[in-house]
Image 1: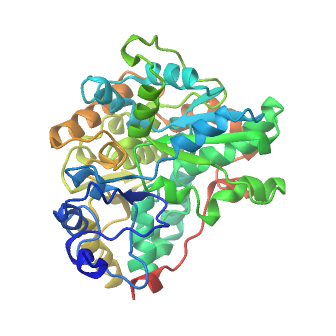
Image 2: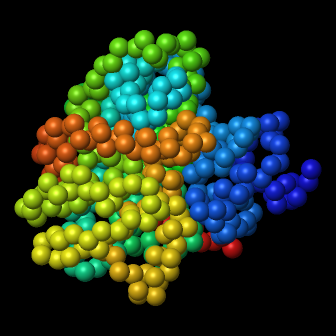
Length: 448
């Protein structure tokens, strides 16, 4: 069938798409991928083509494909081959929060089952020397983002402020609303921050040459494969004077970890749980809930309240921003000011808000946006599921983990305090700006 005709039926995938690819032998031309790409989960009618397809990398087309003709660009093979090559490298891996409550599904377990400890053991068995938790990076993000929000509220500048953790959402703004990118927080995502810290602070603390570190992340998100390769994610090399060194070398999805484990004949159910490595292994409950829609908002508000000397307890189980609604709103009082909050998942749900900002009609001060239903727990790299209930079971798994965690505010994490004391100084310091913050570009030319 002619490619032009095919593109009217299905989502076109360019050969150099870093996130997604298609097995033509499995494609049945059903159009499910195009329907999901045009509905409320992704870019909804803004699907335009110049010379290459526009893709925000979210992978929801993968989740809709009945034959699995669409899948993520597999990077586990490259990591595995590098491990087997005999090259003298130090393999480091970090796990995103949402993966721990989904991976069990790949081995016959239940959605929402927290297999954090078994995941750590699995990764050690696969050959990783250091295993870290991205909740540490999430706590870093909150330290930077909460302080940025308080600064903007004080100056009344660039409000409302949007969260910037979701790379599909960020690319969407850069492509279709580049005039509004200044409303995005400049804070990198947790994965972006953690990669920069691993190749600077961690490498120095352990006496390692950062050029010898192969830094890998496990994510629920296919779009992270795009994010780690963007120009802003080479900040460690820029600070250290090392050219062409990415902060994060490879991104593998939750599904890829399961594939690799099965190839390696590892019996996941029989693994004995172990703990993350020290130094970057300790995160808070606030970092864990980043994987659920509303979690970034709740974590940031906890930190803002702490910074202002207010009681944090009202925000330790902040129900107004939890749950499955596409748009959730809340009002709180911080520093004597009433703040209007919104939490959004699904890019169609944020579009009216963006138009209101353009027309100076937006009532909100702080807005969290995630592309995927339920947030990262519903990401395009998670186990396949046609049952929406599994997404909410995963969300509950994260909130349950937060509820039993001793430390639930990012600023109370002693490892975070140590990084700032030893290296970063304070949130939004000069070195923090270089390593932990980013800038945005105008991609609108792609949509013409």
